[in-house]
Amino acid sequence: MSKLILVLLFAAVLPAHAADLTIRVDGVANAEGNIKVAIFNSADTFLAKPVGGAEAPAREGSVQMTVKNLPAGEYALAVYHDANNNGKMDRNMMGMPTEDYAFSNNALGKRGAPRYEDARFALPEAGAAAVVNLR
Image (cartoon, rainbow, N blue to C red; front, top):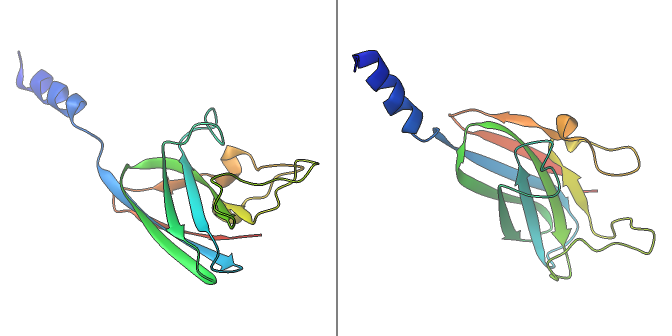
């Protein structure tokens, strides 16, 4: 085999470079429960099948956490304050969230969650930081 083919085969089996994502969640109302983050990498899986996540104890004001070793690429975040620590986003009878939440880019949806395209951001190999504001 030529050296070029060997190099291409070797490069194909190497994992993508890992990057760290630091997430700061602002607007945490109180220190009850946990702040939960779900990380998505496509419009097809957005809000249905996360590729990763993070969780930290709530603290009034801001909470910061870091997710390590994500492949560089495009992602979107969904964040919520699980104030009663029941492991789910609580909703009222109309289906509206009763716990504070946010999406990356502080994206807003029309009558629901935003589109993946509105919440997505780039995570370069050097890593990145994302800030969201709970509402």
